[in-house]
Amino acid sequence: MPSNLRYLGLDVHAETIAVAVAEPEGEVRSLGMIPNRPEAVAKLIRKLGSREHLRVCYEAGPCGYVLYWQLTRLGVHCDVVAPTLVPTKPGDRVKTDRRDAEKLARCYRAGDLTAVWVPDAAHEALRDLVRAREAAKQDQLRARHRLGKFLLRRGIRPPAGAKPWTQAHRRWLDSLHEVDHAVARLDRLEQALDAAVAAAPGTLRSVIAALQCLRGIRQVTAATIVSEVGPLSRFPHPRQLMGYSGTVPSEHSSGSRVHRGAITKTGNAHLRRVLVEAAWAYRFPPKCAKALRTRQRGQPDAITAIAWKAQHRLSTRYRRLLARGKPTPHVITVVARELVGFIWAIGVAVEREQAMAA
Image (tube, rainbow, N blue to C red):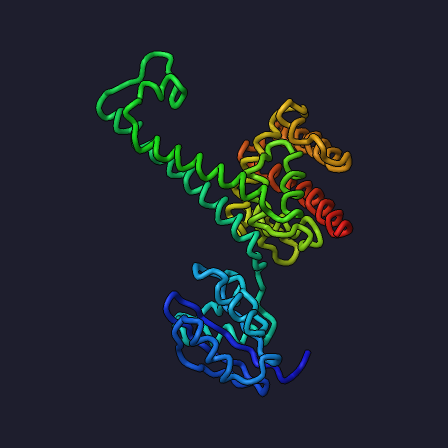
């Protein structure tokens, strides 16, 4: 590694950026505060000299990747790092923007930071749409709960035999406006998602279609996986993807003592949610129903073979763990973790095939 590199740590906020630099000679110093504006960032980079010898990092957060793309266009190497993996001293009780920037610069030079995957424009657009659809679904659920509790407080009950939110129940609630609005919004977002998937790059479309060969994974779930993870082949082994999903057990071991606890819940929460939802489909014996056959139509035999193997393996795993007395939520988490391996296998196979065809 070149010894004349300067490592820049940025503590980024909506309006300001605290800047610190780790010099090649070993000094780490603060460069003060600049506005979070493109012209101020460009001016800072010009002052720091040669861009080939500059390395910049900042923590992933609500400001997104705007700064990353701006620095990349300026010809500067930039890494967006995982904030939860930044080393912290147990006794350090002082936190300021200046100290945070200096710590980032120091740790970056030492190689102690972990860079996250930065999505390209296609992945980010698809991810934003998937997350908007998820938010709309949550809004719809909250609206239903509010209305249900309001009617319960007033002693108003639906007709006999009208199960909640069936067509008969909805006809009874013909004056419902808030829930209708949520349903209409959800419909619009799902139509937009269909259009976005159809217009996505070929590799994304192929992976989304192939993942739907798995039981419990339809278009929304497949699009969520692809948009949140990015290229599945960036993980050399499925265990790394399992760790990224946060479905692996935590561990606290010392000497000969080994203790494993609850799942880590690190990584991507959106990915973990859809994995657990998909895992519930493997409670049932292996079966290729009409809807699944339709999704598998036109897919290579190698992909459908992986999906069929997943059904046998995960369904058997579910029944055996349940027979051993394990709680159902724990069993579903185990199934979700093992499902990640089959998702990885399908995604990597499709991405390699697309790369060879390109």
